[in-house]
Amino acid sequence: MCDADVHYEDPFTEGPLRGPDGIAARAADLWSAFPDARLNATGPRLADGTHAAAPAKLLGTHRAPLGGLAPTNRFVVVHVVFFCELREERLFRVRAFLDAYDAAVQLGVLPKRGTLSGRALLLLRGFGLRTP
Image (cartoon, rainbow, N blue to C red; front, side, top):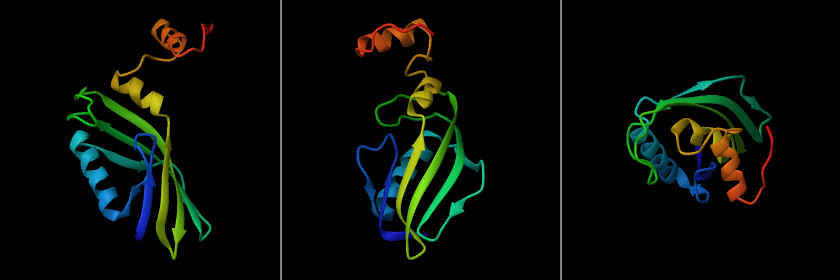
């Protein structure tokens, strides 16, 4: 499925992961942290021969450390769209688009939007106070 020079990135990768081995290592880390993880399609895959898009929903329980984050034992549901560039009908560039803030809220890392804590975080980040 993947080109030998495949690139993958999502909001949590520091830069593109390169090659099938890089993607496999990332998947192994994610499956270790979310052993019950599953990816469900949420719509049709769209393709035109050079690009493809696949909407999906990632579900799982955070059971082991991941990137310095201790296990939260929280169940998360994250909607994601994979946008892919194809090379000779193989995946060449894959980008996962998702709401990283919402994922962090579900894990208990960041406050919910619109709460007092959420507004305080915006204030600390220099956005000023906002009313809901």
